[in-house]
Length: 500
Image (cartoon, rainbow, N blue to C red; front, top):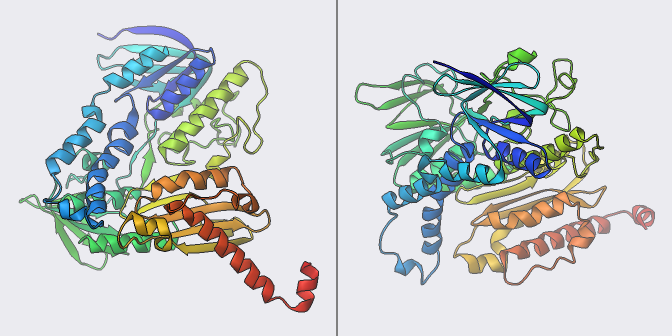
């Protein structure tokens, strides 16, 4: 028999993943009250099916691969990867799919948790239905924040659902390694899982209609594909899957547009994400269920006319607003939106100027991302194509990362590439990309340079230690200077006089 209770908070957050947790924490630290609603595990996708367990899957084989490239270390390797140990370590990083620790943190932070399915039931009202059918009605004095994240997109392919295809969740939590593993897609999840399962012993086939890592600089996909193929992965770029069928023996048949067929034991579909907004009561406030939520610069949800819904009481942070589908950027949004809601609740002004305290400028200009493939990919800001599309007058500077002294010491046969994209009118970086072993640790320096808009003339004074891979910064700046000097030397006398 269901029961109904009512309670009121300053802010109600739907979703207790890293974004929702950070919103609530920011609100409570400001002196207001907040509650979070969660229908699954506190900690969300990142903690149990994405960021943490995927990197645990990849790290052990990456370390083994790195050791195999160093004379003196490779001779100490006497066996292959221990699959059971890797999966066990993965389980630990996923807290064995229990959220006791995260719930304890909420308790310590003074944030009430309401377990159940949260749905909007009108302006500032959220109804939470628990497993027993009981309903708790939460009323928000100031704001409701949607932080429900996203899920894997499963396309409407004939036979796909009947074949019990894996999404990223099933791949990340797999208890055994398929002998033959098919992957449909070529983005981050597809590339990382191809790297992981190949290293764990699967014969992997990748069917990537739009190529591998197509939103990155072109050389990124080329290098990752080359390494995947070297590891024995069959990569078919341009292959569009048109049908899926699991036969009576359990084998999965993947048919592509040209009629070719691939047979695997399990298949992962990783072609994109959809927002978790299908059943959260959007229709009760005039919005379309299942849609990405359009927001303004302070993350207030907009109605069909493009105005903040009602008096601006509804916000969306993280994946649900589609600004940047990465956990760290969602947490950034959470911190900012927490400050914005607090300021508005207290009648204070908002500093939403670019790079202001309550601005989300990094979402447009300085989003960092690492793809933990072999080789790793680390990027921040705009690609060369993205900068050109934005109308910037740019200079693109490339350098062979393997030619840096620190890279040579790091691993035998180190291969990589670095690119920086310079806004010539302002003399600052707007994008940086690295591809190569362990380049993730180079990324934050690039993020600071892009986010802080450090002039190139000032970057010359940030001296990289020798011999480290970070010396790539010196080489990129030298290459930029040489390019500029060569162009100046090619000017006509009249042009030189004008420049002077």
